[in-house]
Image (cartoon, rainbow, N blue to C red; front, side, top):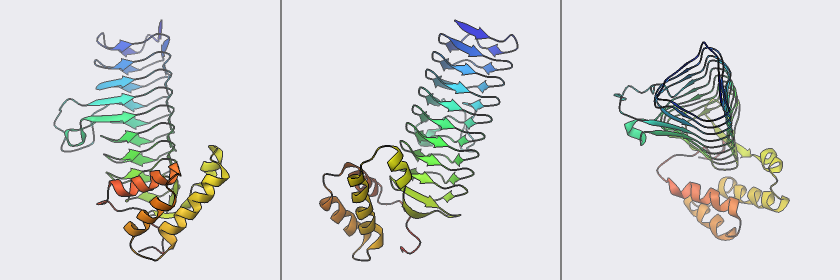
Length: 265
């Protein structure tokens, strides 16, 4: 069953699931697919080849799936995939992909996008991600699981933001952020580990203690190169999964710069 306000406009070609509520003045264009138990409060605009999963909530004035803000975009068919159990608060904007980024923007499950957050073209967002009020990510940015973008923060195009990381409010991210890290500043620097987040998510004291030790070896030691220290940490903490995730993150894109502590060159 679909509950639709008489002022809303839904294309006959759109696919709408069951138990969907569409409030006043919403517009859903063709090629849009909406899952079950979705609630569009009012004044929601959904365009493009957009797929929305189950149990999502959209608050007034969201703009979802509209043309990417990329001057290279020439109208090629691209997609936006949104998973289940996501909440989009007022004025959130999300763009689909472009040819330069695989023609798709992907959002996982259980994410919260607060007021006026922006997700640009070709971004890849994992599960349980939070973008706080006015946070914005440029094209091709990756936000891994449980990452948090603080209020009024921004990420430069192509940045990778690791899982369980915390981006402080008003922070400008122009380099990659390691998993479990915390960054802050006008040009982000690594200020430590996201200890509060780790405790809230049930990481054991032993795992957190080892993460502290690994962090010290990677960023407090002045011995050898960062690559040397990554190799050492990989060998010392071979059985610690979170630390191995940091190691993999640092090894996987060696050409990219990463956020480091202020005293790290």
